[in-house]
Amino acid sequence: MTQLYDRVALIGLGLIAGSMALAMRRAGLAGEIVGTARSAETRATAAEIGLVDRVTETAAQAVQGADLVVLAVPVGAMGAVAEEIAPHLKPGATVTDVGSVKRAVIDAVAPHIPQGVHFIPAHPLAGTEHSGPRSGFAELFDNRWCLLVPVPDTDPQATARLRTLWEGMGANVDEMDADHHDLVLAVTSHAPHLIAYTMVGVADDIRRVTDSEVIKYSAAGFRDFTRIAASDPTMWRDVFLTNKDATLEILGRFTEELFALQRAIRTGDGQQLFDYFTRTRAIRRGIIEAGQDTDAPDFGRVKKS
Amino acid sequence: MTQLYDRVALIGLGLIAGSMALAMRRAGLAGEIVGTARSAETRATAAEIGLVDRVTETAAQAVQGADLVVLAVPVGAMGAVAEEIAPHLKPGATVTDVGSVKRAVIDAVAPHIPQGVHFIPAHPLAGTEHSGPRSGFAELFDNRWCLLVPVPDTDPQATARLRTLWEGMGANVDEMDADHHDLVLAVTSHAPHLIAYTMVGVADDIRRVTDSEVIKYSAAGFRDFTRIAASDPTMWRDVFLTNKDATLEILGRFTEELFALQRAIRTGDGQQLFDYFTRTRAIRRGIIEAGQDTDAPDFGRVKKS
Image 1 (cartoon, rainbow over the protein chains, first blue to last red):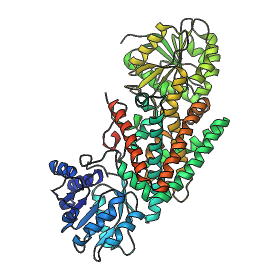
Image 2 (cartoon, one colour):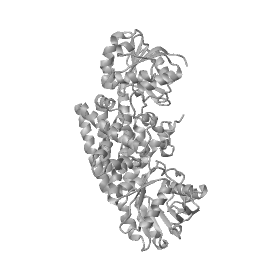
Image 3 (cartoon, each protein chain N blue to C red):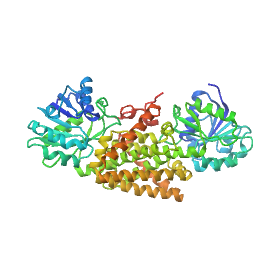
Image 4 (cartoon, helix red, strand yellow):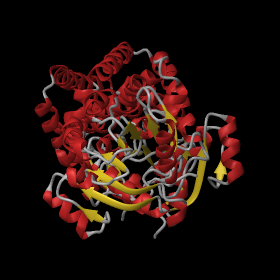
């Protein structure tokens, strides 16, 4: 594939940035990949494993001469990073981000972007429960979606190039308005994560059921919750604080439905339960058909012995 | 491995019974495996694919001369099946079940079991979202837990033999009291399933987010909910109706915690969210260490292209 950017700067070296470095290298999309992180330990690890071509101490240094700058820090830290790098950005460069919330990131970052630099918010819908510079892998974005959220007056050519980059890293790309993005993600990601965190917290609290039992017998359903409830705490704290309205709206709808099903259980209304469970089954079929999950027995999990 | 039972009768030919037939055959644990199901279509499919050695039209026929009878029907149907087979059970035989709830099954089945027949309730903690006679596979129970719930005065030798059978099918075996079982499963399975069903139902309801978006962008967390929300509706209706008290208790605790976290979001209490999410991460580590899930990137899922 053609090289798209002579120099890419990754600000933050966690799961997403690390996977981007590996995916860009896999396809030869970038000339030089420069990276930085706030933590000295993260920078040392990234240098040691050769995650990027060059590690810098500061974000200001990293963006020098970069044609593409990727903000890959928790959503709550995006504004401060934008402010720090702004004076050092190369004219004509593109700044993008990978945050899970888009309206708050645009509000925090856009005011700092100088004239002549293109700001194109983005969000790859991919991840695992792991974090840190060792957690990335080149295949993370393969067949996953990346949503571009162009702000008004975004340069079409800069957007097209960023789209090509994401496609080159394996992703499918869609464009979406920021507010709609935040609502869609509240449904498909933010509310489910909070619910999973809550259920795992409840299990941990119940003293009559020991930790050991919760863990031993987790294959009966619980373990699927624990995976998403093991995601990075800083990242998720920021997601909930910055996508507050949409998340609370979906959680309100969730509680309403949950109460209706609890009432059906209490009153013994088997027909209501059966009809509800039949309806939800159809959505699963859609996800399999869309290639966003496997229907392999035991969910395609690798067996451990 | 040594043959443990000369003849085994499977009542019901769904995911669990089918997997038992294949796992028993893999290890040579049973002489003849006889099976039956209420639906003529299921019986025809089982016969066609050779799932068991012999298919009978009725449960009464299936249990004739059987040394082990496995009730593998939805929890709500256990009592009626026990009543039907009771007069036909071989003296000295063992009757067991695979239901997800134990107190209700014991109450429904035990009164029908004749003198001289051993009733030993059991529950293998394994499954997938698939159901029906084609869904079984021999490895389903490998490294999973099976809980035996012996009733008072259960014959120790009959229990030991059933334990050996489950171990021969690949499972680890524990014994547990019925009420404790029902509470542990309410935490690790029943409440999580109801919550997943609810979240998927909510997503389906929200008209501003089209079905297609929910499905396309499901990799962001939602798809893990859809898997468990695709489980067999009849089975799960019966679980909730028969483990009502424990499930409602856990759901009450869940709602309480969820409200606390919603308040933290609303008031912007990032520290509370961070601390909560840090605590739940530790439980995940325990599950990986206990070998009950994989920590492979992308959760060990097979990639679909």
